[in-house]
Every structure is written in C-alpha cells, then in structure tokens.
Length: 139
Length: 139
Length: 139
Length: 139
Image 1 (cartoon, helix red, strand yellow):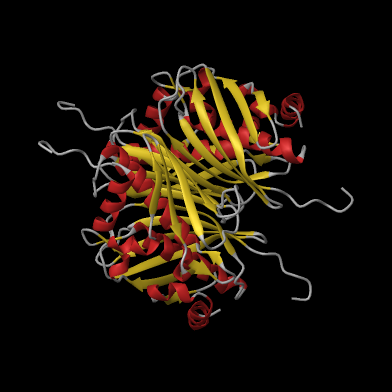
Image 2: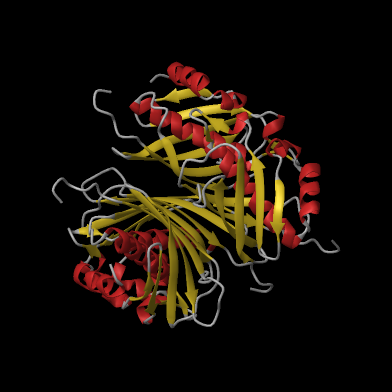
C-alpha cells in the first residue's frame, strides 16, 4: 500500500484517530515515517506532549507499517507494546520513524523512534508486536 | 490522597483526560481501582476498545496510584510502560486494578490488570515505571 | 503434567539448566511456584543474584507453567520477556510464583514475581509470552 | 573506557560471566559491538541458542556500553529489560550491536540487536534500562 492508500484506509476505518491528522511521510518494504501535529488535547501541563499521545502515534505507525506490507487487514491486532520515554517532547510536529524487525506468518515486530521538532534525539522508543490473522480459504 | 482528592487533582491538572471521566473506586497504601466509561472516541471497528485507550487508562491508573502515596507531584513522569493485550474488550465500563510493586526514592513500579464488563479475565496487563522527582530543599 | 513429570521432562530435555536445580513446589491449572538455590555462578560482586539468573528462572517458570497445561511440547518458544528489577536479591533460595494471564491457541502470556528468602516483597517482576506451535494432523 | 579496559574490568569484576568469553569488537561514544562464542551450556535441543543466553549477552552489552561512557562503576544496576525473540539463532558466534538511546544522570536506556552468524537479520531485539548510582562527594 502506498502512503496515500494508507492515509485513506485510516480515515475510512479509524475515524477515531482523525484527531491525530496522521501523515505518511515515507513508506517502503520495511520502514515507515509518519507524523502528526499536536493539538491541545495532546498536551500536558508545562506544555509537554502526553505519554498516551506518543503511545497512540507509535501504535498507529506500527499498524500502518504492517498494512503497507500485508494489505488492508483491519483485523490485525496489537499484542504487546513496550515504550521507554526518553526526553521531554515539545508541542508541534511529532514524527515516528520505524522499521520491521520481523514479519512472520503469525506475528510482526517493529521498533520505532519518536521525535519532536528541534532535536535529533528521540523522545521515546517503542517496540510493538502485532498478531496477523490467518488467511481464510478463498479470501 | 483520598479518592476525591485524586479526582479533583486530575480535573484541575489534566483537563485533557477529562474525556475519560475517570472514577477512583478504591485506593489504599499500595493498590488502586479506577474505572472509565468508553465513548465513541475510544472504540475501534467491530466495537472493541482501542489499544491507546487502554494504555491511557493504565497510565492514569499508575499516576494516581503513585500520587496517592507521595502527594500531588505533577512532575512525576512515566519512564516506561509495557502492555500485553490479552482479550477483546467490549465497550462500557472498563476497570484498571493495580498495585505498587516498588516505591523507591527515584523510581516506582506498578502492575495493572484491565477488565471489561462481563468477564473476570483481564483484557490487558500493564507494568509501568514512574520517575519521582527529587524533593527540593525547603519543599 | 504434575510437578514430578515437569521436573523429569526438564532434566531429560534441557540438561543445560541442570545448574539451576529447579524444584516445582506447586502447579495447578493456571499457576506455578518453582524454586532454585543460588550457587556461586549465579552471584554478582557484593553477593547479589545476577539479573540473567533471574531472567533464566522466570523463563523456566513460564515454560513449565505452559507445559503443565499443554503437555510436553518442546517446541514452544518464548517470543518476548519483560522484566523489572525491583530489589536486591540475596543468595539462597529463590522462588518464582506465576500465573497464566492468557492461554490462547497461538500465544500464552504469564506473569511472575520473583522472591528471595527473608522478604515478602518481590525482587523482580516478569511478564513473558510464549508462542505455541500448531498441532500437526495426526499428532 | 577502551575495549581492552572493558574486557579486563569484566574479567576482574564478573568472573561468573567468564563462560561467555565476551569480546568487545567496537566501542565508541554511544554504541558498542560485543560478541561471544556459544558452547554446549548455551544451547537448547535442536541446536538453537537459549533465550537466557541471549538475555545475558544483551545485559552484558548494555552494561559495557554504559561503563564505556561513565567509567568502571560496578554499582550500576539493570532496572528493566525487554526482549523480543525474532528468529532461531544458530550456534557459533553471536554478536550484540547496540547504542545508547539516553544517558541521563540517573537512568540510561539502550537498544540492542542480537545476530547469529550467516544472517543479517536480527535473532532478537532488546531494550534495557540501567540505574546509575549518584556520585558521592569526594569520589
């Protein structure tokens, strides 16, 4: 799936993450870069970006990276996610850069760095595992 | 801090999680039970609750469990969170039940089970680590 | 599988963990307690137990908890393990107490507390995921 | 610390990991490559390398990466470790390649890929967190 197809699939299938206004900046055979713009609802006191916003961005990035490889399978589900928060993120554009560590028949594993504007150091690091539903006969 | 104080602190300090309408059902020296009611924004296609909603609930539960012990320290920050998604959650009331595994000077670690209505089996399991800011002199 | 069967299976199949001298103290439908006695090779300077020893104990506990339910399937493999080190363990008897959070067709998830002698507080907490190989026809 | 200093420090301080015969192949300001050769004690039935061996290698790699930056501080301790097992490793040389994601005053976070001979795909991926003891006055 191309960047445009991924964005369209997302809009159609997950209206609930419309608030993130996700943009696919790059996608290829084993990596992806997506970005969002933080709004008030994503911030915490002191003007930092909330942890759940970063987890949601990483989860979406993993999903789109996986879809890009296996096609629009809405039933793929996250089975685990591990995040380390590293630095204080600032509001504005937030980018998730990730790659597949494994794309197996039943499980896919990816890792992601999250970045704020104005620094090359990651604000968080995520590994996530997705379960891939078995293909049905005739499907 | 009591349940009422925690809810008030949350409303005052984190208006962004007002959408969760969190309720502290129980809190004591090393455990907490909080609940939320899922709304459309928390759901996924097929009527399941989104992973990010569960991560946000667990993150809030850990924060409130910690605050209940150390008082209203808005600067305590999550340093890591690990979640395993176990079963498909259903919309409605979602409950997080957790306990402190460690409350050290610099780090606190907690674990949480997340539960949907209509089942005693957890829909997700979370461990989370918080960094506790050092007390300032005179504070 | 009973405690004795588990210990026998372990001895036959994994001679490499003989150094742990694992003892199954309890096992039932969804929980297990196993213990080991630390030897010099498991210690670190200052007389604490090494992290890898604790990870190996937890990994073995998860494996035996799973085998107790699904029978002697040597091909079940760990897919992920997350450990939080909480307190300094002391040499001597170390116990892992765990339970299944999920036993699905393809994945099993368990959580474990590790305990040293002389304290009721856990020295570490582990969640682990195992992949269960599909049954072959005729097997 | 240089590669030679790290290996010497390890031999002096952690005789218990002598069985790994660790070799520091590269170390710089924020990355490290170390390797080991698997022996019988590191293997599982079917000739694969055991999970605990990989966890021990990753833990040692993180420790040495940290020491290379902050000097020989035997008291730095792992606070958490998350590993995803990705592919079946083969006996022989096993390499851990890692980098610091964060080197803070109190916490350091690193990520590592583990590699078997004969493949460029990682057999496991690890993130680990170390607690750095505060410097004593006069030290």
